[in-house]
Image 1: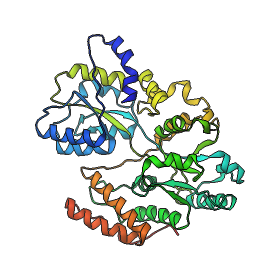
Image 2: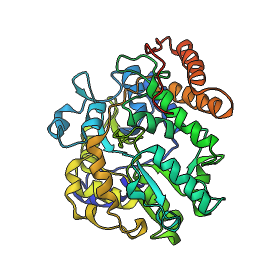
Image 3: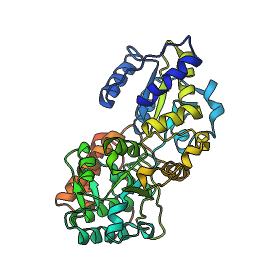
Length: 393
């Protein structure tokens, strides 16, 4: 919402007859109101809503006529947006929303601590090598852990799956929790946990304090986290850097995404032309998108925005790394995710499996247990690979 607010003055100047009212609510409240309103035929809903990428499938599939078709004005932008995000909004021949931000993931790390421990981050290419770096960090400072981690959240698990082109559902909609890729991802998390390389926090708000206190030396996150970090701990300027994700296997993928959002117009909205003008101005406009990047850290899905020299500008906070250029280059490597209507249930099941695996269960057994529970909830078939092969030792 902060990004949209930043664009209001220039939008008002360009469209003086349109009055925009922005209302900020928490995601749970938004989705509850949106679902209730769509069930009631659009009653009480605004003209435009922001929807997280992973929740869009739910609303499109549950309410196929809920969102307006944007083809009349947005079809000309095909090719101008991140291909993965465009695929997400382009359904059944209709454009159901407009991509806002893309969220490739990187590995933020304390450059100063790595240097003092004699670790050259540029030589790290696999998670196995990164775990060895964690052991060297602990030899340097026994109180220092490798990675900050929130166990009641499945973000890291999703990232490790996405690196292997896996997600919670196969492309034909089967539950994908016991494939080798998913087991591999959870096995890696459990290995880091068992080896004492993770600082586990009780909620997501404790991550930055743990990093600020020097309890952990790295964190896996997307572009917006860079802005949050600079706002919360400006005194750490120059101590941070970023690198691509380590691969799970030698020569494997080092790219993944997590999150992002779109703007969608309600089909029942009374101000369709004004809604279209606002969406187009904010999201299909280089200047508007880059203003949101600079103020909030939202990496544009609108690719022409990357022409701005700002992307190649060294960022002092991040060891003079051209951070935004790094993330911009990651966008072309993003992988398809089939979210389906049941993503929220799958995310919850995977998080519970993660907790079980960290506490006592074998990762495969934990995932199998929750896959079967998810099958009962959704009536979806569980994808069962022929062999239980785990390439990670």
